[in-house]
Image (cartoon, rainbow, N blue to C red; front, side, top):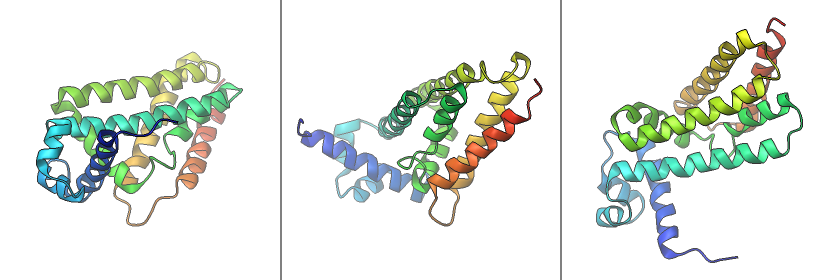
Length: 195
């Protein structure tokens, strides 16, 4: 196993600090100096590693999107049926490493700022297309064609809504409970489509 480079360790620390600082202050208001203070670093070091607040946010979101992708792939590999694969996609969105108040808060702020930043907008499009593609692939086997997009939109809206509520939660989140409730929602959707 290879050892982590100092630069990689520092990047992880700065990304962790970004998640905390953006949650506490909001992306629009937080400064590089405040993020640096959260990381016990200097603003110059953030500028050295990332160049700008937008690039730091992009790196932070790339880390979260990588976790989502890895969780999705792992779940898909363990699934046999189309329903199981769809549930794996849903479960990945509530992965223990992702579904925490600070990450949910950051994600909401990412969505809010994506239309105003080329790099964030690109990440947003990639993520939405990936989730849409996975859902469509499995819904092809589970839902009549004329209802697929409605079911997909309902499912994605449900997941987005849960994240929005979670970003404003007053107590720690329970990812296992979120997965269970999301699975129940999928069941309701699939069991109530007209065949």
